[in-house]
Image (cartoon, rainbow, N blue to C red; front, side, top):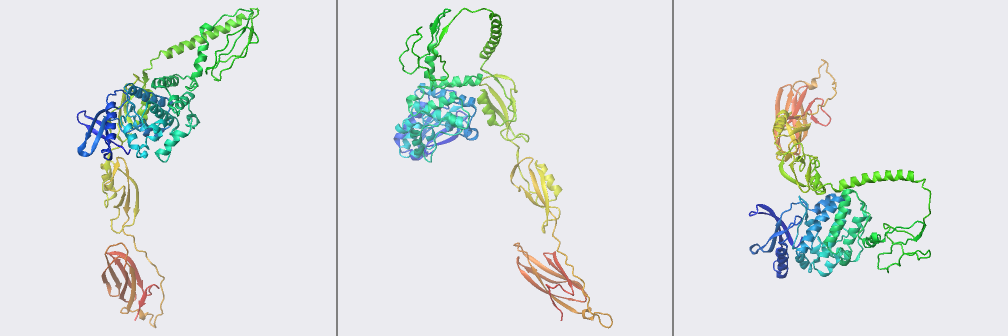
Length: 620
């Protein structure tokens, strides 16, 4: 990221993988930066929390130019940044659970006097238990960025306005970063982007933060309000501490769990509290029948003078009505009670009895739900799901996915779960392990060479290593014997999963030369009926032309003749690819046939006389 290199190494003493944050060599000569990093990382080593990937060793390797490095527990390769890139926006329950875990981690650090300063999804590990890493790097990164702000490009979308101004990490800045992560999980994007770090900083400082509920995704009012409160420009307008944020997040989590409404917002809670307090038991009174009472609405909560006490006069001043539509409001009214007949009591009593029974049933149901163990988790079916889907379900349902074995499987794709324990439908406690066996996909095999073997032999060779014959086609081939393989896809030596089909091309042998048929020509006969011009000893000279194929190989051209003197070879000459060969040949008798061969393969045949028009016949 421009300041630190992040590597995975093996700790021989712990017999476990660890993550190393190494200060890049170009900063090794900066004593202030090195000491800042060392001090912050050392302070973070005292942290111990289920949701913190805390550093456990701070050291240096001067021989290799490493002025300072920190080792922390390895948390796997998949982080929240990658998951958001794949699946955002995220389900509300998972979003809230993630924010609760991060807030608890930051609260623990704050109680220990440690500020993170660089909270962003790339530092949030999601493999197994969610953990926040990257501790101790923020101050050094900010110090290095004083000369080159572009070093903060990765952190810029999550950096609060006051951190840009002061260059100092703070609890308020970490709360702001939580707001950006919450916005990103709800909408699938960060509030502000830009071409460089300073452009993003200017937007954080000068532009109003977009509201999550304005995005296409549906966002409950409560989550919308929490996000806006975390992303206010002034730190004093954000949550005062992590405890108050946790209170709101846990209320939202309970509402999502039990189906309660989320129509409230932390932005208007300061108005709701005085209203709820206005209706206390001390103000409840029994109104005598036949008397007149004026009832006034509760006053506004915002620094208004206390309202005058209620009076029975009809001309009492009308009070101010609270602005929040969720508050209970009443207008001044005059109620007069008069004696009435009691004939209506019977149907009223029946109605009240019905309501009472229904209410009792509802209360009993709520009681059962309230006393239901929140730690009880029903294990979902993970077989056939990808490892990513299973771990996402684990975050949502609150159980830990533990891989105990990985095997090759022709049935299940790579990273797909094929076995689990306990079985689906079982009840377990929250945060307990569900062990799974994961497929490594089909076993890879090396494609064998089946070139120039028969089809049956090629099939046996492929099936022996777990491959299958795919599509077959045929082509003319002058080199490969008829029926043998001339081409295979994929080629030999490639790695392919077992069961892969290999397409084959088979040879049809050499392509036969085209047969040219010429009409017979009648020649005039002499007085004896003989065509003496073409007697058995008459010479017939012909010049043939042959184009040698342009294939880069050497060729031997041969011409055989069949005439009145019998069958014999006239010419055998070597030629190069691409030559145009004029061949003058002579035959005897009434019927002469010349045959041209290229590398002993018949190419063309010419008979005469008469000769084809494209051949030059020389008949002395």
